[in-house]
Image (cartoon, rainbow, N blue to C red; front, side, top):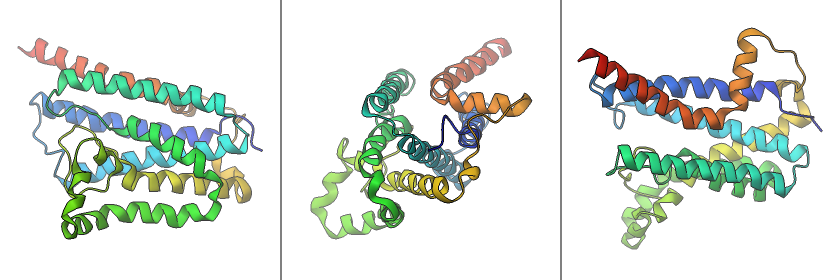
Length: 248
């Protein structure tokens, strides 16, 4: 059993947070007209988004592997899950105010909340998580052809059911992280974490390694990632709005 939080997982999570911050700052600059960018179609931005979300979900899977190795009970799991689900509802409420026609109803936090339950129930499947993860990811590319061949499956594109991710067209929303293909990434994180704990525990870092300077700041950011996630966009939008007001 590995005691406590492992610093390299927090460092990896902090990397995702900082990358996300830069990405969202550019998004806000585009929203306020300071730059021109197509965040929905330009591969430069869409691939970055995919990489950031993948890093988030992979580290979430790693963390679940560590939690299970520490015999984390269901009460503690549900406390953390409640924080994630509550934060997801706050994101939906905030996005309704800013983007009423494309608000976030199943974004990254909504997806993580559902995936955490699935992962918790399936973490004991061992090496099967690797092919299951690959199948979940492949579903993204298989779905359009299957739905085109079976018109009755068009219902899977409707709001609510499109949270499954087996779709042929993207919904109009500012953030969309359905179960497929993203559950596959979290499954791979769990599988990688459980393998590393057995064979290469040093790869995941240490719970009591001394941290100073930049590393200490990054580890702290990784440990407070949910709070940072909720606060960073209001702060960025506030700064850009202030810039707009001062520039008048």
